[in-house]
Image 1 (cartoon, rainbow, N blue to C red):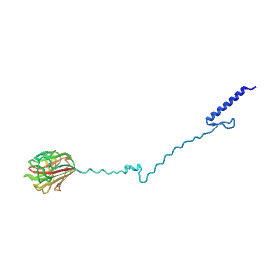
Image 2: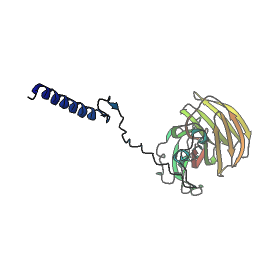
Image 3: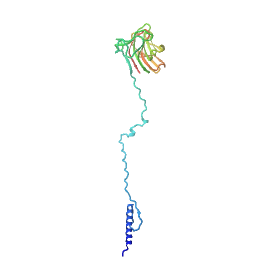
Image 4: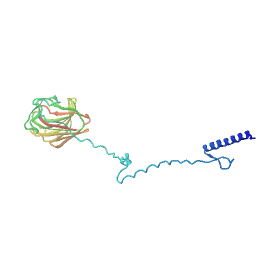
Amino acid sequence: MIDLSRVIRGALLELTSGILVLGAGCNGLTQPANTGGKPTAQLTARAVSPTPTPPALAKPVAGSASVASASPSVSSQSTTAPAPSPVGSTGKWTFDTDPVGGLPPGAQSFSGQWAVRAEPDSPSPPNALCQTGNADYPAISLDSKPYTDLTLVTHFKPISGKADQAGGLIFRVQDKNNYYILRANALEDNVIFFTYVSAQRNQLKAANAKVMPNIWHELRVEVRGNMFLGFLDGKQVVDGTDDRYKSGGIGLWTKSDSVTCFDDVEVTS
């Protein structure tokens, strides 16, 4: 007679052994060939994809510059100061297109009798600006712009006058009572720098120079800081210094009963 209980226990034992073998295979464990041996752990080697090696940087072609070398370093950049702006003409008056009998546009008469009139022998015909009145110091402003350093030049012709035959430039004009003067006189044969302060004239520096009447002359002043240079017919004849006025407008000047004409006034700064 078959012992069912023994059969059932044997079947259960085989079933349990199969389950264990299956579990061990899933866990990476293998059962040795001999029955009853302990399971031995075996590592399953996995293929690891190698990290890709980045491509080597391309070598620069001979003669080409890298980005770093293309941009100069701060220390290699030039520290040379920028060149100053070129000096240019900032104002010129020929009076040739101005109406005869009037003043040039923008001009302001401080004293005397000023008007544009025909002067056929002027350096740039047909017109000139002339003073024909009688006053202590006839003067006219041509430009009230505040010039600092400048070169101011004009041609002038002293025509007549019993007390004076003068022609002059005024610069760093503050108003009708305050400015500097450079004037030449055909009766005195001299060129003088003056200050004009609160309508009072005072001499800075004088020099002798031949000034012929009824002849066109060139009068020029160069101003740099507090230093002034005066020129007659292209020759420096006088200098002066003063710290009173730092900047100001420009214009023309005569004295007393001087009848004087002016042409080709030009200022540069």
